[in-house]
Length: 94
Image (cartoon, rainbow, N blue to C red; front, side, top):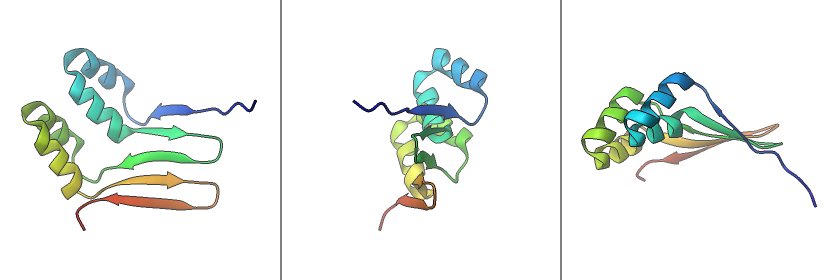
């Protein structure tokens, strides 16, 4: 049986992430989704968001569907980085 490693890392302040987990869990989820990346032995995966993460967190609290619209409008993309390549899959209307 083969064993593979799967690592998750957060690029920003972990203290803020923990704070938002206790204060408002949906905001913590949005911040984690836009700030975490996942690593396997050969690839790295993360969500690239070009907009303001602060406004995204605000709209998550105020009215969640607006946060989803911001993800689409600001051109978020799933980025897959491998040993020799980098692929971005856009999350936007076509």
